[in-house]
Length: 95
Image (cartoon, rainbow, N blue to C red; front, side, top):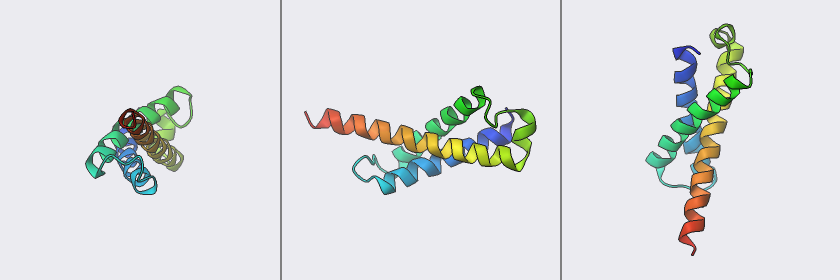
């Protein structure tokens, strides 16, 4: 994995976490926390796609397909992690 892919995944994860927070206000944890969770989720999502062999190679990372895959993986991972943590927080708070 190159540095460009990682930066794209982290930035996309932050955007994905923030977008998920706007679309799912019930699970939102605030803008800053959503973005931080998105960054972590973006990194994890991108790494997972790389392990699965989807757009994670050095050659793919330098091309448009690799960047698009990094954006999609990072954004999706960020949104999913923010939603999971928000869901857990809501479940713990409702007791």
